Length: 297
Image 1 (cartoon, one colour):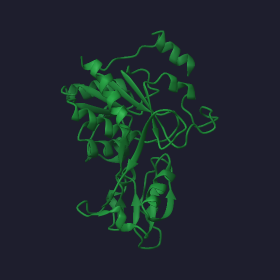
Image 2 (cartoon, helix red, strand yellow; image 1 turned 90 degrees about the horizontal axis):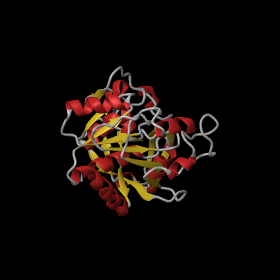
Image 3 (cartoon, rainbow, N blue to C red; image 1 turned 90 degrees about the vertical axis):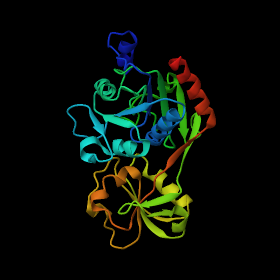
Image 4 (cartoon, rainbow, N blue to C red; image 1 turned 60 degrees about the horizontal axis):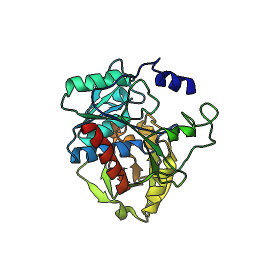
């Protein structure tokens, strides 16, 4: 990893610019750490301040031969689960593909009005040049401190010294801008018109399903709201089938947005989705405005 970064620093390996500013949101540990909610916060913040953002992501598990746009009508098996959530929640154009340089080119060709790109999970994709790097660190910290395969890290912890900002998601293990997730409503997966306050489930026993990087974070969130959680953790990006949600009773089943996009075709009235939003330290917004203002000028 050190040699690879050195080759890019010496420009022996070439980094390619997208033609517009690129903000990379990534992490060091394998699995999700809250990057997707942060990306959604970023594009909303950018839109509020006069930018026209687009989103680029790998599309984990997607069957892709070429860059492709993800929409709310896309199939998770074709573009991945997170891109569909990003498209539904952000209202921005979302493009997926393995080669982020080609994906950025395709996005800008189809959407020339896009004037800034947010790259979801591309901290180690040095082939694409970037203006800002934001690293998210969650409650899992850095595991045993070793990189793959001896530990859970994609890069050593020292990589934090070179990023532009660290976002601390529910942890005091690092110094950075604090982020937390909050949500108040549950949406019925079988009928999007039906919504209930999460507080209305307080004291009720529910099955909680999570196929994310840190399922326990989701379970703790629901318990904090007063729900009596029966936890069902699954591997990150698990390809859900109807039988995965058969627990032998009629209790409500609560799941994350990322999991819900893979369960829509067999949704039942007792299936509920719990969307969450990122809440950032106000100082992070001030810092971001100052930094991206430099590129606008």
